[in-house]
Image 1 (tube, rainbow, N blue to C red):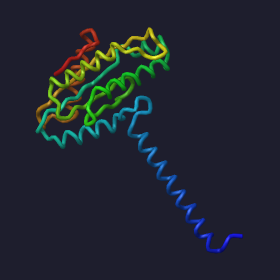
Image 2: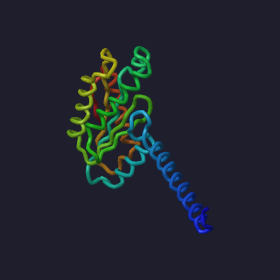
Image 3: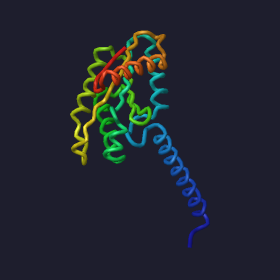
Image 4: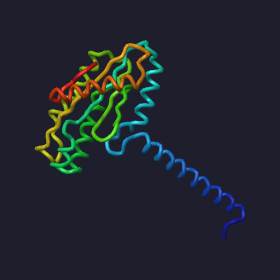
Length: 192
């Protein structure tokens, strides 16, 4: 038989267990909101917020570059090989993007097959090298279980040395370069 003094301790331990479970659940939800479920990259919302924070911290002291990466003909990948293959391909491309950047850089999924990379403190030459590394690695990629699936990416980038270039301006300029890359034959890097 339990002593009357143990009941409050048991009630308190139940309360602590509920609090700990709620904290764990809250952390899981926060992680799920921050990172894309498929690629593990930042979601668009968190990517843009973090990029804005980094831009404000640099405040025109050093150049920064925004890269926009688009998987070429991705709809055809899904149509020909299926969505499971498309998901695997997108995960592989995301892994390549993460491997090509420093820990201090940002990589995010904007939506669909569109990824973005923010390189704070990176000049144009380094940004081009990162973009070419990604482009070549994707071109050489062998997606597991789909040996005939070949991918390429088009990349547009913009480097800013000015504090007045807000994220929106950087995005628009990188997006213009991305469309030039796609309209010029794809599987290439263009910059503004």
